[in-house]
Image (cartoon, rainbow, N blue to C red; front, side):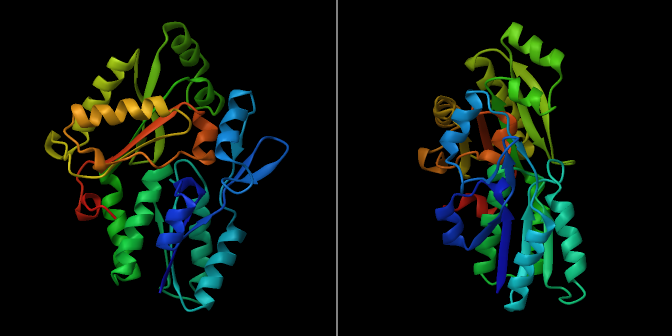
Length: 298
């Protein structure tokens, strides 16, 4: 049996993680005085309310000791281990997992695979769900890891935020950019760039019409041969910005030819990424070259 691990950066809700047998290792979030594990010690709505009230949060990574304990327990029980990490461009969790793998390989050769998702939030989570489907079909540990490494660059996450304040706090944008954005009322378009796995600012816009125009351009540019496949499952979700989720969903139906049942708005961006983006963040996760697992309704 393959024991499947990811981390709190994946934003898989507990119902789904239990259904698919996915263990999310904890990434601590701190307000400067207290640490808590996302989704366990604080309600996500309270978290975003606190951010709006001025609380500044920071995040760490999955501690190597936690990983080693979890991996070793699975291995001692006779399982193999597959860990899908938050992008190495955003967190040290992948690096720590490689260290743990190397330490355990002497005792359990060929029993551990570690995959750098080059993604965050449900872009990472989606890789874990696909891995779970393949595991349940009987695919080998090595075959699943190879598949994930092959397809991870064909899935894309496009972000927008309502304010540059939180990105500035986290060092993602400069003070000059933040000030200019505020004065000109500009909002940014961002993506998880797949080569380095880092969050980068792509463009800025003013107003909803401009946002949707740029979103369409982004989707087409990141689709194979410039043609978006409307039959895939697309995920649209936010921290605490339901109005923007509704706007994007309507756009995907009317402008991109999607059926409502293929648009999943049930996910939510959690504390790990939300600590750096703020409540008003909306993410669109889609496949530029969707495969069979992206077209099925699992």
